Length: 437
Ligand SMILES: Cc1ncc(COP(=O)(O)O)c(C=O)c1O
Ligand SMILES: [Zn+2]
Image (cartoon, rainbow, N blue to C red):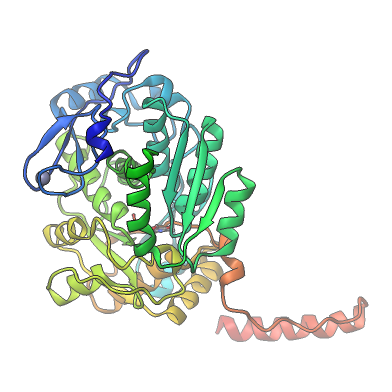
């Protein structure tokens, strides 16, 4: 295994961040190894490694630095993030995170939820999805390791995030997509200077092949070999939401799950906020949204059973992962917190995209449509009460996927004169009036 042959055990040069990260740890068997080790999975049991922190030190360091002195980006609570080189940290993620939390009153009225909030990561930067948070962490780690090449395997958004963040950091990016990718995202990678390769297989097959390639080539892969660091970036969503709610943790999160990184790390981030004394978060439930055509996590939660891999069959490509790497962590988080899960068919997902668009003026991609459709279902099923505080994670932007959304009938072209346009306008107004009633 190349991670055993080529351990990186030299501390990064230069000044340190305030990170209180201590070690890589296996939550399954307790194996521990220094943070500077390049291992990403446990040599004893094969589980993915997690990052551990000195929480006592983090608590003191957080209390000692007022909020006003903290940056408004993903590094705001750097004590609880794994990057130790200040030089690496300064070159990545300065514009990522701190996305809006929007009280969605009009959408809430449609769903019967009075305190519904949208965490709008469709406006995350630089690439308009939640992946800017996690990939930011991975690229910072890449720089910490003094590397200038990075690969990734992507359902869509990881690719664009890796392309952009690697470009800005001066690293070369190689993006591997499964066969049924959304073309706009792959074109964006090319425009951002990355090399792109489409693989003849679904995401799970591509993922397995990329794992082998990363080990045989020694090239770091943002969401494989750098995964323990990558995953930590997702905690920043939890930190931001709780701060945006004035340090009151919501009653519910509704989070779309693919590999399960976001949902499992929001859980970890909430636990950490409680541990360092920033907020009481234990009562917050995490609910999972998945497409009916790829719902291994939701099926296990709703059925009370084990995680069974599935073969994805859905237009929600960005969340089409049939063998989720962090699936068991998600199921554990949901069960421990008392949350639930809901699925949505492809037509329901596209209807929900339109519902979010016409009520809140936010254009999301199928992952976001899945979140909204699942939130509606959870409200209908009584899993979410009308006056509970709900945060629905809108994790990607519809501008990137619009070409893949179902076609709608297009109005016929009319002459550019007032008479013809007057007729069209009358039709518009009549149909708008029906839509309002
Ligand atoms: C837009 C969007 N939302 C949600 C997810 C789910 O992410 P995770 O793998 O963290 O469960 C992904 C990626 O896979 C995504 O691209
Ligand atoms: Zn282990």
